[in-house]
Amino acid sequence: DKNIVLIGFMGTGKSTVGKILARKMDRPLWDIDQAIEDQQKKRISEIFENEGETYFRNLEKQMILDVSSHRGQVITTGGGAVVDPENLKALQSSGILVALDATAETIYQRVKGTRHRPLLKSGDLMAEIKRLLESRKPFYEKAELTVSSSGKSAAKVADEIYEALESREDFEFGKDWF
Image (tube, rainbow, N blue to C red; front, side):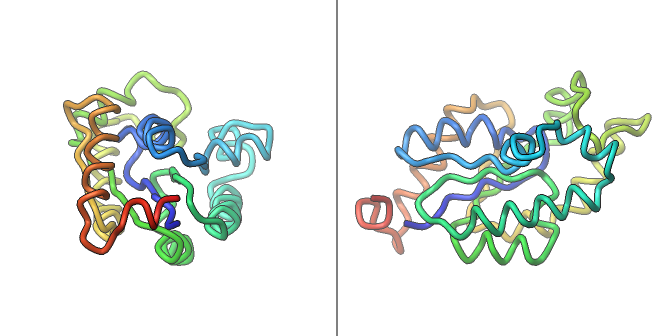
């Protein structure tokens, strides 16, 4: 009944892959950012703009602690969630961390047209992506499984995660999943 927790940088496909994986595994999906937006009745970008990043990170921490107290779900996190040690501990204690990885170029192509990415407001988008990727890399490396989403459909990435989990020796699919 372990949670499957998708972590990784923005634009790696966590939300889309999470939806597919949750359906495939017949599990509920908790998208942390979406849950915060629903709770606050504001987009994440509005929260950043009006209340600041610290306020958002506090909301995120509370949501992660709440969601992590349940089992048997697929959880998707925001790109910076696992930088906080308490968030990382809560997510690790309740589930298996799966990092979605993509090249800076792939991320750039996926996010360049979006306006709702509050941490990508600087002038040189590619430089900011590379800087943030490098600073968060040690946190993403704490995942038990890493899957690249570069050049792949979300369905293909979800299949790879499913197959990797299914083949784990410390896992009995039927026993742990249902």
